[in-house]
Image (cartoon, rainbow, N blue to C red; front, side, top):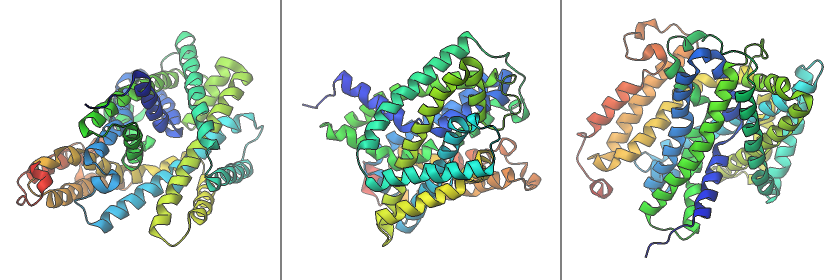
Length: 434
């Protein structure tokens, strides 16, 4: 008889999945997108939800279907290429972008609003202290930070829920007009904005941890595991959607109280101050600051653990190196860091999305090894065109490509490559016949 989970276990799994995804990017990008989208915030939010909620959760299910974490997902690729992809993803979600960004969010919301004249010296000092603390906890590898994280996630969600209710009951302004790309392409622009959460990358690398939790409860059947993953996904998606919808609406009504702000962190700080005053801002700042700290500790630990398996350096040495790089990168500032990360995400996010899609159609490919190479190659080629374009390079010669004008030139060629892969090569893979 197949073992079943109790309702309380399913709920706990769902909340754990929610906590897994709720990080700095999930908090700062919706307000900024909402402010720019203005009257079109509903369409923009829909696109954002597809990339920031749907794809990561589907990614976790893909990990379960693959049956072996990253190795299972990339079994049809050369081992060197699979390792290179993993290294790039860990660099992106670690020292290059996600971890420094979490530190910067802690600075923007938890520290900067209380400074009279914030400048580079204050940012540098904060970065050193913040990442030194993160390094200390990462080195200890203790369970203290896990306990803190379990406490902070409910507190953060409660704080965001209170903020959401306050925004709905007492919005601090009227919904403004749409700006920039959100005027004519709100849906696709919101979709692309969802890249910034980087949660699809995280799902591919850490989704196996959620599968392990289910299996440790005695669930061994793959179909049952996938079923509980879907249940957990629905719970997590509901929580994330609630957070995103409220923060999008906050941003769309923030043009008056947050005039002159440069990023989502500043928008949040200004809005909370307008609603609750300094006391409310201090409480939210403390919760978000500590939540960002736990996120950074998890990212630093994960990167150090993986890199130590590839080199002769120990885990502890990698913790020091990764923490130091994070502190240095954080000094570029939140706005600048986001601008630098955009071309990288435009180049690699479509590849991650394509890898997820291939996992679901693998059994129908006559030659998965050849199919994966062709389809991922096409996705990377066209996504690089999108990446070069967002860097400001004149790419008008490629305007004939479908969806190139909205930054999604990779989509249709990749779908076409998936269809063609159905007839590439002959079957030599037993799994393809399963």
